[in-house]
Length: 235
Image (cartoon, rainbow, N blue to C red; front, side):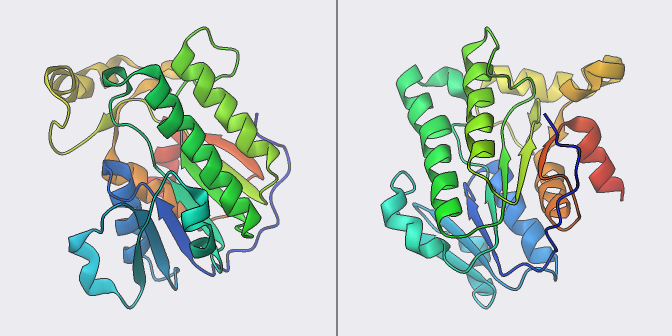
């Protein structure tokens, strides 16, 4: 799905806006942005603020808004050049299909549309390993369709980050996640070759990789999985 040509988008960010900043990945996107001197200003959109960042008001603006209503937050996107989206339900299997569709698909698509309308040039979002609009698995089919919808919006640069298991510092969702957090580091050793994309990724590393990618030249439409994350982190 990657295009063959390099984007000519220069890295001269007017600012970054983050949707999903209260989540495990989104919070680490904000952290990586704050740790980099390349970003003159950063904004988050959410239903609550992040107390840990309140002392950084000189660079960070936390907008309390309805994240499901682009009319409410659309004007807040003005003046930003880059958008990062890590918005979604942490454990989709725990909600009904309608809620998953509304949050993980419709809300993300609406955010991308609002970003495009307000002149944002580079859209980076977290999707899923295996995302494919032709997949027989509903989750992957919807994620793949969303990727295609975002590509069609015509951003100067679109970056799809496709992680597998997200490794969080603590167990957030119960027995299943607890088992996977313990087992995945062992399983990773057996995931070789084309299976490497299914390796787990630490949420702090993923957030850092997403920001580092935005600070470097890339393809106009690009999809990155585990090997791509590691390359960014090691550069």
